[in-house]
Amino acid sequence: MSAASMVRMPYRVDSPAEIARAAESLRRSVQETELSPECVMGVFERWSRHLDSRELDDFPGIVFLRMWLRRGTLEPIVTRELGATAMQGGWTESGSAACKAFPLGVIGHWPAGNVEIQPILSMTCALLGGNAALVRIPSGLDELLQRLMERLEHSDPGRLLTSRIFLAAFDHNRDDLHESMAREVDGAMIWGGKDAVLRVRSLPFPHWARIAVFGPRISVAAMDAGTWTDSAKRDTWCLRLARDVWQFDQQACSSPHVLFLERSAGHPIEPFVECLRRAFEAENRSHRRKAIVASQTSKIAQARAAWLLNDTAHRAIFPPSPDWTLLIGSGPDIPEPVQGKTLTVLEVDSLADAIGKLDGNVQALGLGMADSERERQLTSLAARRGIDRIVKLGRMHVFTSPWDGMDLIRPMIRIVRHVSSAE
Image 1 (cartoon, rainbow, N blue to C red):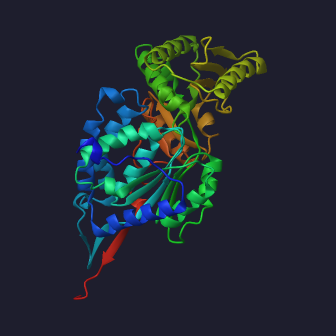
Image 2: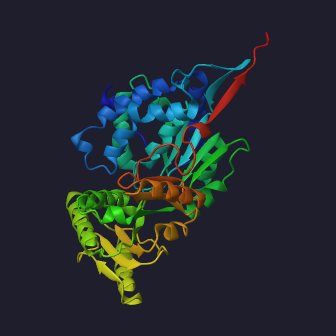
């Protein structure tokens, strides 16, 4: 495909009519051609290979995106959500009837702006169900996403997927364009903070539209005494935790903000905290922040000062710059998240006490546990308290199904049931 034949995405949109025309074209693509998960994955696999380029090494989340697009990642998700025969998109017998997954149609996507690859991740979920994707692009991501979409164009010469994608770039204050998007879709995937989610949910969607919401939440980490006191494995655990903190500058809902450490008689936490400091320094050298907004710098400085002034037992470790911060104290209560690679380390007498205080505002719990039986007990406790994902430290950002307790593909498809008229 020549550069001249490529269609530039995202599109700068300025009128509701443009969105209506785009939605009409997308819906026609869905209605005229069936697209099985197998076909979609073939394009995704090629796209993943085209993203493996030095030119994209600086793109936030590019390594994760390449892995997400691979068949080995997506096929198990499709199989789990839609069944073992879903890959080819055929009918399956169900007693005297036959069932098959069909797309809803045009899925609107309102991704958050804090994770650069989120518009892509969101739309891939809809495409795997055979849908078209009408995606509102947050401000500031146009050029970044253009680089990714150029690679998709090269990976999709038959336009199997690009004919089903429209990335619409417009200012978040354009209520008329948000409303136009909502009127034209058959389903929506909404991501972001409380105000953004409520605003999108209030839009004039058709009464039949299905809505999947992935709202604002936080995540925490916990380690039992047998794990953090194990000097042989301490470095590995600290590096895993540092990597979870570093990704997405701690702005993702899956970012840990607090680490609960179970007290152990005769084992002060200083050696562990020192190991964690080295891990943070190492991660900072490998993935140094390129820029930080002034308000975040101020927030970090205020959090450091407030932590030390509020309790003489509190300690803090941080460099002169706002690159990262460790706040050390005790107790099971979660302080207000600071972001900006700020981790609060809290000693507790019992992990069950800390986890028992969590609620549905916590999305993920990252664990480092030496006692497997206690881990099963804590997992059940966390699940009852509203936590949707309990994972090993180092894997807190692994985007997979279910997410926030929901499937990613199935909510945006219809299972059509056919009973033969010959019966």
